[in-house]
Image 1 (cartoon, rainbow, N blue to C red):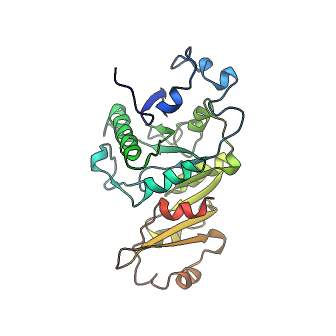
Image 2: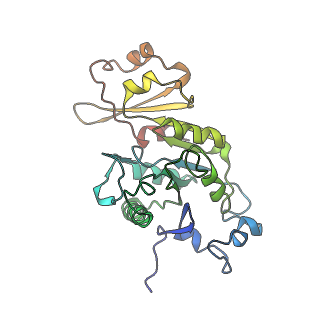
Length: 265
């Protein structure tokens, strides 16, 4: 049998994929589906006795452009600029990289769970080949029902992750483009960063869930990235106009993890 790459993602729980590099550390008597056999239940999380910091990231419109929605084929995805490189840098600084994503397209019949898992494995293989980044885990909900415990902003996905890792949430971040992403981070008591591609809409709803920071990056005529990081305690249209003089003439702002990473030390 061909040896799996460290980045290969295996469905270790119904709503969780785990990278091969971690699977190889699991005890030989672990049984998928038997939570009593998992590391924390046995008293030894995969990261040992020292809690690890994590970057929790939404997927669609944070890592990749969501396009018309319900994306499930990696080759059809447009990955936002330099996302993989910046995540790889943060992983080298000691962060677990965990994607947390709602995928209601599964329950709506738009694509199958297996297609989603294949898409995530294609993403994992590509980013590993390009940058050496290993996506440590993927937490997902296939449900459209907001009451589903695994659907953001509910936090059952984190409870699943905590069966394998002890996370220091005070040093961890949640990054996403929607209010429910920020609420998920708030529910975990970790730091939150909102990225949004529609700045005018963001201005109209900037008070919702009060993220610690908003990351804004613009593309100018020369296609150079200009990074601007703003504290939400100071956000109002007048101050944004001062910081971004072209606000009124250039309403189409492209925001991605590259800007958000400037806030993570």
